[in-house]
Length: 352
Ligand code: FES
Ligand SMILES: [Fe+2]
Image 1 (cartoon, rainbow, N blue to C red):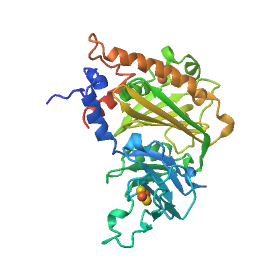
Image 2 (image 1 turned 180 degrees about the vertical axis):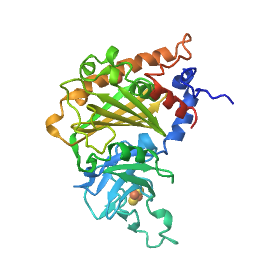
Image 3 (image 1 turned 90 degrees about the horizontal axis):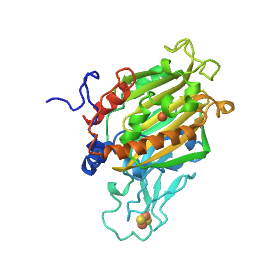
């Protein structure tokens, strides 16, 4: 069968507009992506607290999930096995967890410990009285969770090979910074837009002063895309070690996108994690959190005024959403030099 998005970008057509406006297509895709690997937190968030509910987990993974840290870090269900109450709403530090509804307790591995007034209950407790322990993967301080027992993500090796030299595990969570944006557009339009630097000179005048448009690089890999922004003369860049294949380049930003909606943006000041959360066919929530390496560089360079760039992107994708419901637009074509990240995403999306 001919593929919807041709492998050859020179002849391929973009995703049909129905992908961005059809409720059934949206639901079908959303059901598939909820149980993939998703970002939960950075380990620094578990340094003072050993129980940390993941605020975005319900909308992104379809489950209320909490991280717990004992000997290992676990992603546990945050739903009480008695009558379904949410156990923890705030980070805390404790050896046990107690549900505030009727007092059932669990240990930090999710094992049922105690329940008042249950002495007469027969065949109790059972395995199903423990909290579900979801899959967890850690890489250099970043914690990923999947609600399905699934193989380790291949993109970890890509990150390791490329930026394994960064001391990401030592970055500190900026607790005062948690930004949420509501976008009136389909989540895939937000991702499309992120995956090309093509629009930078047209949409982001300030960013365009910092990045060298002609040197912008895009690489694809299984499950993701890496874009590299090269700094113009005099702008902030990474100090790249000799053992990196990027040694000698003046890199202002590494933009990693991992399917479906994880954006790991590394700047000389640290890491901005952007999560793209599909809410409905034409509503998307974006969450920004940040983890800091070098605080003195934070307002500078390509990772400086992220709010302004975000607003510029939002205006664009909301306008494109209107375009997607027009009877006069169905599909377009790709620029082979500028849109190979978008092409790669569309091939993943239409083959899941
Ligand atoms: S719902 Fe948790 S103890 Fe009843
Ligand atoms: Fe943009």
